[in-house]
Amino acid sequence: MKTATIFGTLFLLIAFSTMQAHARAVRVLDIKTLMKDSQLVFVGEVKSVKPSGITTELTYPTWEDVVFEWLRVEVEVIEPVKGTKKGELVSTLMLSTRGPGPMFNPPGMVEPKVGQYHLLCLLPANVTGVHAAMTAPFDDNQAIFLLDRKHWTDGAHYYKEGKEVAFHEQSEKNGALWDLVTAKGEINRDGAEYLRKKYAAEIAIPPAKDAVIHLKWKKRTSAGGWQSNVPDDGSVVDGKKKGKAPDGPVTKP
Image (cartoon, rainbow, N blue to C red; front, side):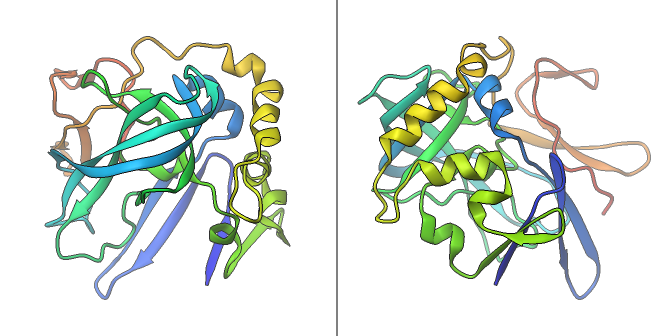
């Protein structure tokens, strides 16, 4: 049984192993922020999924021995919202794993399949011609949302202010997602039009010029033994980041 609860913009996912417990903060954005800070926003259909060959290290105590690989996903724009045109193909990188698994508190991955519909909120990757979720690589599924009412409701419980509510009543974002797809799994064009009109002011704002998604990461250990993730592509110089690379989880093994 799934339980979903939102506490502001960050919440903790807690998993217990036989040895110790680890909690990981998840980057959860409201819909206005998603519309404003993305370069591309659109409802898309997955046309193909294949390995990109790009792998990276992501450091977290429960992710040892896991190889992270970006999938190259071709997505056709069905309903443009920001920065795209209908019928355009957008090459999108989505994180996946190779390794023994399972992981406790894994990164929020999308697991795309051909034919699925998603709402995608993307930024350019630091590789020409491809994009990734604006919350990548740690929380892809907080900026790429599978549009499937059954996926949201089967065995799931949602809460707001301590009371159980329907999925679409929990937040403004959930309500917008609900309206993008029908109970039959068809895209609701009225829902897409609502997004374009309701968030026109946010959609009109371009993302920061230095907002990119870094694909290669490495572990950094502080003098005190704390471990964190930093981009492994020359964007960190003398311990300082260039641009707006997201902060990954900070832990002590």
